[in-house]
Image (cartoon, rainbow, N blue to C red; front, side):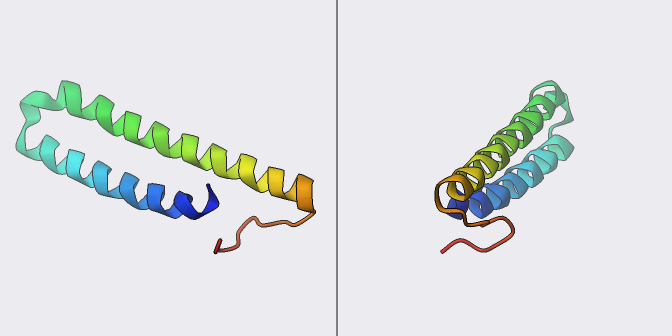
Length: 72
């Protein structure tokens, strides 16, 4: 979970940029594109919450605070 958080962040940035570019080129599809950007961002939040849970589990089980550190 910790290792994949940065990957999810990068993918979120990529897809939001792609969707915004598409919205510029296809404004007639804004009713679909706009909700998709929200969905992408919500999924990124799920990833953030999962990371927080994993960090808490590591702290609870091993007594190590791994917040704000780079995973291996």
